[in-house]
Amino acid sequence: MSNRFVVEADGGSRGNPGPAGYGAVVRDAASGEPIAEAAEYIGHATNNVAEYRGLIAGLRAAHGIDPRADVLVRMDSKLVVEQMSGRWRIKHPDMRPLAAEAKAVFPPGRVTYEWIPREKNKYADRLANEAMDAGKAGRVWKSKQTFAVLGSTAASAAESDDPLAEAAAETSAGAVSAATVPAAAVARPAPAAEEPLAEPPPVAVGWAPDLGTPTTFVLMRHGETALTPEKRFSGSGGSDPDLSDKGRWQAERTAAALAARGTVQAVVSSPLARCRQTAQTVADRLGLEVRIEDGLRETDFGAWEGLTFAEVKDKYPADLEAWLASSKAAPTGGESFASVARRVSVARDKLLARHSGRTVLLVTHVTPVKTLVRLALGAPPESLFRMELSAASVSAVQYYADGNASLRLLNDTSHLRQPGA
Image (tube, rainbow, N blue to C red; front, side, top):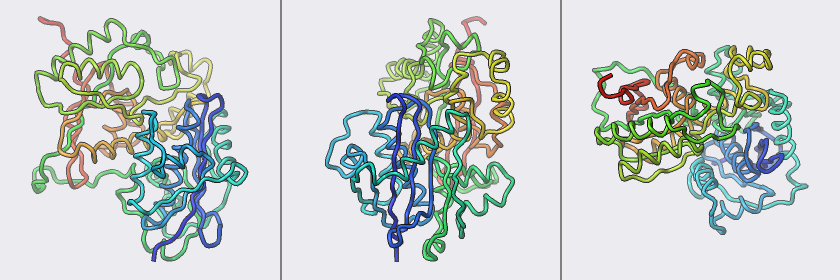
C-alpha cells in the first residue's frame, strides 16, 4: 500500500529577479504532520524559477521517503499549479526544463496539484525566507526542526564524518531534513540511483561485459571574456560578459576541430552569454541546434563577482578561508560547490536519459566541468582545486549502462595552437 503525502512548496525573489530561495515541507496526508523539510538559497533568480525549484525540492524530499507514494502538491502559485496540471501552456523557455524535471521525479499519475491561498502556505513561505536570509548572511540553510530519522539515507549520513556521504544525503534540490515516517515508507527506501551525488561503483577495466554504446559528454569550457585573462571571478551572479575577440577566435578553432572529428550529435549550453555564443559558433559549424540547460550554469560567486583572488582575500578573508576549507561554504550572497554539484548531477542525469548512446557537446564553465570530472572519478570535493581548465579547452567523459563512468580526456587545448607552433 502506498503512502500518501502532501507537499507544500514556495519560492521567492527579493527584486524579481534578485536574491532568491525556496522552501518546501512534506506532510503525512493522514495526520497533517510535517515529515520532511527542504530549503535553499539559489542566488539570482525570478519568483517563478524559485517556485519551480521549491516544487522540485519538495517532490524529491517526498520521493526520498517513499518513491511509490501518492502526492498532493499544494502551492499558492497559480502559474505553477496550472502549468503542472496541464491546463496552461509553458511558454517561457526557462520554465520548461524545470517543469520537465518536476514531472520526472515521480511516475505519471502519482502527483496531483491544488492551488491554495498564500495564508495557507505559510510554512513553505517561512522556509523560503529563512533560506534567503541564510544566503544573504553567507550561510547554508539548516532545518531548525529535530526529526527522528528511520531507515533513510539521511540517517546513515548523520552518523558519518564523510562529507561525500553527507552530500549524498541531501536531495538534488536542497538540504532536506527527513522525519519519522510510516513503516511502509521505511521498508521501501529510495533506490541508490536517486542519490545524485552517489559515486559509481568500481569496475575492473578490461574485464567488464559489453555494455553497448556509451553516452559521451564532450565538455567544453567557453571561450575567453574580458575577465578571463584578468583571472576575475565570473559566475552566474555577475555581469554575464560576452566573448572577447580572442574568445570568438577560440570558439571558431574549437568548432573546426570538432567538425573534423565528426562525432558530436547534439549541442547543449549553459544559459550564460559566453557559453551560448561559444555553443552557437560550434553548432553553426556542425549544422546542429543549441539546447539550453540551466543546471550547467556557473557557480554564483555572490559578493566576489568581478574580483580577483587577491581582492577577495583582502575584502572577504573569512569567506575565502571557509570556502577553501569546505565545499559547503559559500561566498557572501553566493553558492557553495556542494550546491553546484547537486544541480550539475541532476542536469547530468537528465541529459544522459535524453541522449543515451550519443555524443553530446556540453558548453559550460570551470566548476560544472570539474564537477562532472570529479563525480566520474569518485574524487573528493577538494579535487576541484587541483584541476587546471583553460578557456575553450575540451574534456570528455563516457557513461556506461551499468552506471560507471570513464574520464577519456581532460583540458585538451591542442586545437588552439597556432599553425606552425
